[in-house]
Length: 229
Ligand code: BTN
Image 1 (cartoon, rainbow, N blue to C red):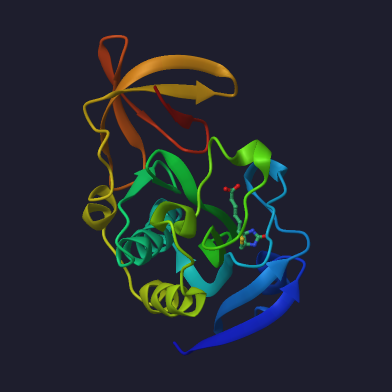
Image 2: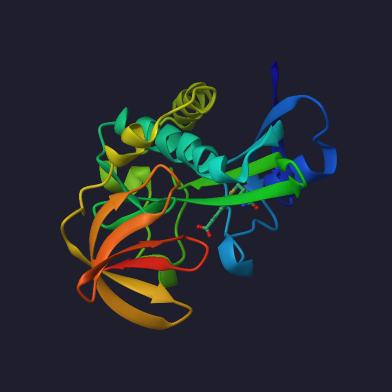
């Protein structure tokens, strides 16, 4: 299906734009800044000029619930490939954060609309730090492409690369190529209750496979957040 690309100077949130105006055509909505950017868990996402704020809107009638992980893989791998093509080394922090040198460079907010047949519309919002200044309180945990490369980055080139990569589909193996923490101890955070586990794999269904308290467990990103030790 044809994808229409919409570029905006300023918007409240590219995800909200998709939900307001997305109809039959697939959309990629890009904004130079957002005035009410949204993060996961109801948080706000500071979206100053210099970053890349992109949402994809797709109609995916009768898409089985079990395949929702593939929506996430497609955006996550697209971001990783984009960052990599600028000579950086991205790491996926399950489920869909992208880190460079241990700090978050990109966050993703997925808002699927469900019907009885499965997912029917998907909105995937990507906030990639490029040249934007980061707030002081995030400096220990977040980074941007220009900070990592120690020079300003051509935002138009990053945008072009990301849009091209978002038009492709990827596999779980493509996703796992950006994971370097299998075999390592991680913390599983279940609403504040933390346990230590050894990460083993990510299954085709998106569950994290890990070894915890002497047995194999498969945990879902809906119930667990991953923390590195
Ligand atoms: C997170 O890490 O908390 C997710 C951040 C997602 C931010 C992106 S920016 C483009 C899109 N529009 C939004 O309002 N949020 C997402």
